[in-house]
Image (tube, rainbow, N blue to C red):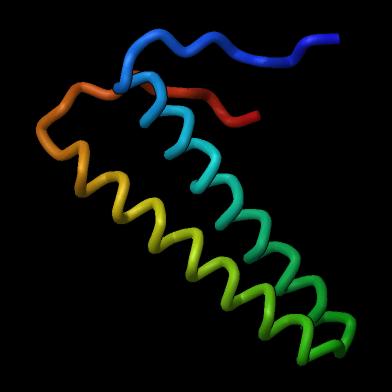
Length: 76
């Protein structure tokens, strides 16, 4: 089973990378909230930190592609 998505241009690669970073930041934030709700503050803090790192990665990618038409990649 091949789940690879063909990428034929640098802008498509950026689009996929940005979608991955965006989803990772969202999921880590969700995990952080869940762990906080469960009273596991140390793990919640770790997930919050990871969410920030992923958001920073996304910011970097968005800055690098400013002014470039990057295709929209749907979540998932």
